[in-house]
Length: 405
Image 1 (cartoon, rainbow, N blue to C red):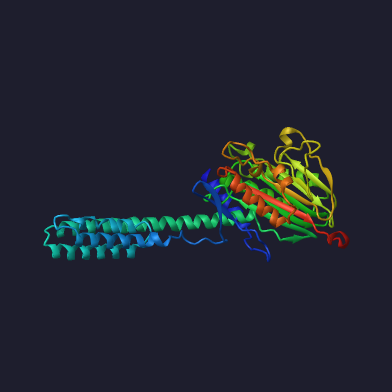
Image 2 (tube, one colour):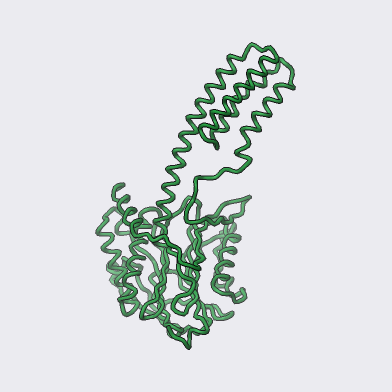
């Protein structure tokens, strides 16, 4: 099982293209909990070794100075200097091995000076204690640095794998303004099952957003299979129903290629949309996913499917086919696609986020502004994020109606 998961990840990473197109604003974000409020920090495509704040770096030096000064000003019968081994022990949590050992030597010198000044007879005992603690701290520091290097490598692989599913989308494509949002539920969750993609095809601008059951390597493998199949099939299949069947077949083959006890549960909910160049009759296919939202000025409407369609990889099991709905999009209209992490965000009272009510109360905003406001509102509304959040907004630009593609 472990070897199979490693093979899944290796194949996924091999398909990664972590090149950010010019003008893209998509930046991975990670929430951090501060004083009971969840906020976010933005990070670039490469993450250096975990940084330390200046107070943390200075703490061992300040502790050494404080103990040294206290040893000189306190009565001679109070052996404060015996606390100096704490300084190199503290340094091991944030300093390098050489710096930790160096601080231990400084502490040893301080002990010798204090004991010689006060004519104490414990210099050998205290010196031996400092030497022993320094040696242990140096080894602990070495182990910490090795683990940090390993963590950095794992995060780099995770970010490469994530770039397969969350490849940056150009801000304009096929006469449409497009913006995306992704928020991880936890800082450690660098990869997951949320996915989105946009393709400018001969049939119009085609959109995909989806959510794979589960998390971790298994989920990102399934998500990668869905996205890569979409990137290929979106240019070939003449309609969304055929495209959905193609994605379903890809997931079936993926499950057969990597069989496991969870193969029968490897499915993905998704929404496929096809917008003609310049707007017009837009096709929407909902595979068991939260319905997209049409935003027309202050009018907000959820596009519920007229007939249910099965999730991807479930059509054969359920014996069902895919049904396509049609909605007219005029220049200026926006279509919001999102994963269930948006509507399942809860506040402290356990109430779900009222997406439609919130959208109806908002002033009209461009796609980037809309997603930024949605992001901020979810962070302030939720009592921590229980699930990843992905969202995509596409707007038909006014000058695209007359120009076509």
